[in-house]
Length: 460
Figure (spheres, rainbow, N blue to C red):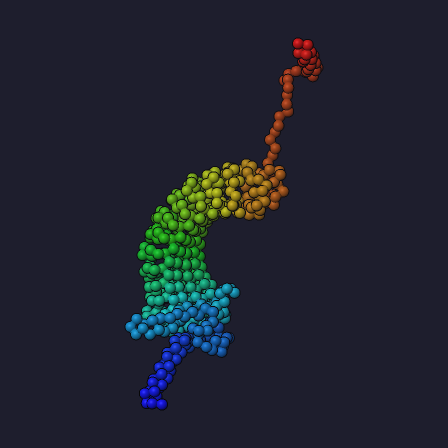
């Protein structure tokens, strides 16, 4: 073999070895760096120390992760190097479809969550902090620029002020803190979350006036502050949230007048202002200008006045909650005429009088009507089929002058109503002031005359 041949052979093996090395490198998955991997193990142990996570998941946590741990690839714009990092952490078993790592009653909140995962986009806790108190941590200003979803649901032992949890969340789209021990007022920093689409702060211990300016939240679609201790007026800046689909301020202490600026919420389909302390200003007439409404709930506010004639453009409404509002007057027949998609109607515990509109009998999709404890009267206009369809959710007691047809009285839902009395039918009187003998004589003469004319017609 010549020198040239040996050189060519050596060159061939060198190139082949290089290509095999490159190929193997390309096939090998990128691994999570050891420091970030160790932080995941520590966080998992903080929410459930009874599980040996390192033994259960010994391999790379991005290649073989537990449910709830999600990773993604990132390319450095300068070096073009590709790395892998944790982007989602979800804890708390929700269902068989979302079997996140379960939390123990003594779960603790690891500070590593806000220091070790700089690429984190979603952080989710469901029923994790239920017994051992976990305090809202101080979030470093260097964390949060990538976070898009921050969700804490049903964690009653997760306590602290809301101001401590907002952070530098410039990319945040969803802020869901529901059923926790969060307290204090809403910080002004909430009004700077320009990319936010959902703010749900329901069922916490928040209080004070809502003074934050919401005008910058142009992308907001859901605002839910229900089940807290807020008081004072609803800020008029809520009317600037023109993309809002759901507004729930129920079960607070809001007072004054429901702001007219809410009429600007033309995309709104769910409005719940029930169980507050709004004043005696009547049902807002601006509801007539919100044609996309599907549900409107004002129960528990003594707004007073009559039910207005505002239903002509609200045919898409599915549910109306107007219970315990101090309403007077008659129920408008136009409600039954225009609200043909209605499923739920609550008008109970008011001072309504008059008859139940006959048009209600044509509400084919309704499955619950509550008219209890009013002053309604007259005959119930519903058929046997209608009462059978609605069943026990047809609530009518507490209306002593309301009555039901005898053929419906056996129905359980209307059994407490009295039966309608039959109208008096006068005895027929043929001849007033004529004696019995005279009546017989008159009748005989009439029969003779009738026979005479019959005989004459036959001979003619």
